[in-house]
Length: 228
Image (spheres, rainbow, N blue to C red):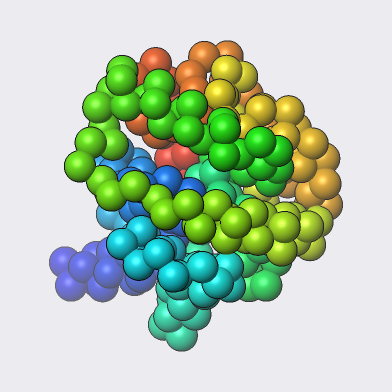
């Protein structure tokens, strides 16, 4: 009897999806997900590094996307289901990949579908965040050439949101200093799948998963959406 329960538990664990998290256009790269990764228990997680800021000639947009795509292909080859999470630029890439591959769910955190004056906004956000939180200390700066690659990623991937055929959840903060929350509202309307939601949080800035005011709330929303 005990052997039966052990086999059943093992079988259920195999069925859990792989969670692939795609980071944004920031020098912390995969560390953007440290808080979320610590909160998720019992899942296999992959957080690919899309670029290395110490190699300033890494400026082909499709190479950045391909590094995330490789993780999806590897999971598919193992017969695993996938949940995609994307933050900022990573949200745009995640939606693009969700349009190419069958995934269980797509979670978009402050997705950067429109960059507008991204250079000015990003520099201001970095300065403000560093002064208050000191989280980014010790990370190499992003090369100036990477900004155009970021724009190429957005320009080539943003329209794929209309081809996504899985449940989608947007989370954005009303006081986001880098990407206005109205961008999520606009692209939420472009999703054709019936199972979609867009959550706008009244407080907090762009870095949802690090903001002391609401990170616990955001992480609870993500966990509930994954597990429901």
